[in-house]
Length: 322
Image (cartoon, rainbow, N blue to C red; front, side):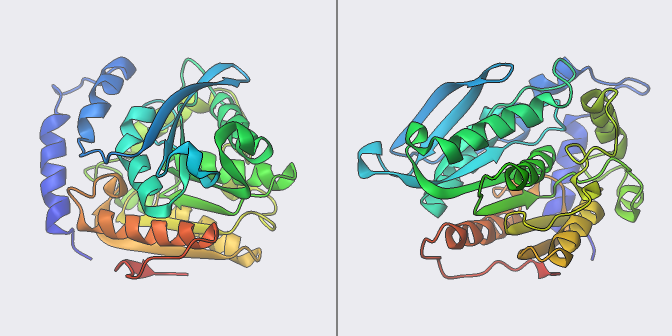
């Protein structure tokens, strides 16, 4: 499919915003300073939003909790959300607008996790923080005002990687999750798929940048460790039911779709939807991409169904591929 006109405009703006003198590369600090400006958004008002410091394995983990109803209305199903940014960039503020929309749309509490970042905190720090919050939500629901047995995990890009990893850890450690929402997740360390080659430069998420981030995050860890590369897990049976969303013009497309196929082959209920003509990050930018709004609507309906809520009418228009 050709690039959607909205994608062309987005890439033009992104190219001007990230332009650097030839031969230069931004520092991690410069990239962290810039990332917030990349996601301007109108933020929905909610009845209850609070920031907490969860006692994680490496120190306090920032968690922003969103509720579409006041706490006195009782326990709600919960979605633990893990932001993207290549395990190096980003934080709770960068997916604040998204988490507000998820809370309002699904009727769930959303726990937005500010896990530790590389290179200061390489693998498995992010996994450990993500798991600690998910395990607490599932095992200590009263702490969060969460309905017992109604916890889902979600994430985009590197956060999708963490969500997939946490879903496997939950299976292995006896924690039941009702769903995993994986939005263009990193699922492997090989970086050798056709989509990696086809969309390596000029489509928003450059292959060289993600390879740099992966090296910073991985450190000296075994690249086949399933906590880094869930696609390499020997068995995916028994993982939580899944929704996988991909973008056609994204280096991560093939490995994300391969993961969805492996889940399905292992007997895990999964629906994969690819959105044509768009690039990485479209899900976070519904103000720019109509497909982003459609994908959010699809994700909301899938999550509402998973937690037992009544679903809204109206399907998105992405391509069904599983």
